[in-house]
Length: 92
Image 1 (cartoon, rainbow, N blue to C red):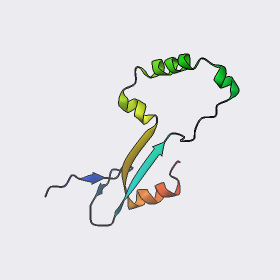
Image 2 (cartoon, one colour):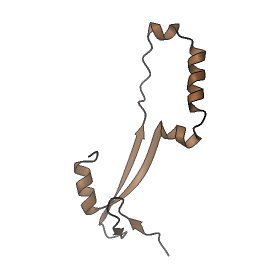
Image 3 (tube, rainbow, N blue to C red):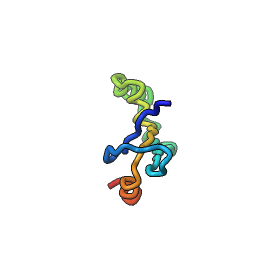
Image 4 (cartoon, rainbow, N blue to C red):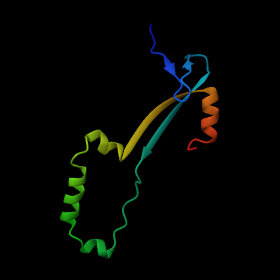
């Protein structure tokens, strides 16, 4: 069986399945799920016009681009050395 080769997302080292020498990192990110705060001032606005402006601003986005603004899921493969550096400072 021919397996597709795996490479570390950070350093490019080839990863060998079954050796225990790499990590699979799954990341799921989604936009703030809490309901918006609505004020009395918000209720005085022209809601239909606001919706039209929002739709117009999204008109040139593909379905994927629109979805990426709300939800993304990805899988990373990291060699042991890169994983150890990444897990200590995942955002830096």
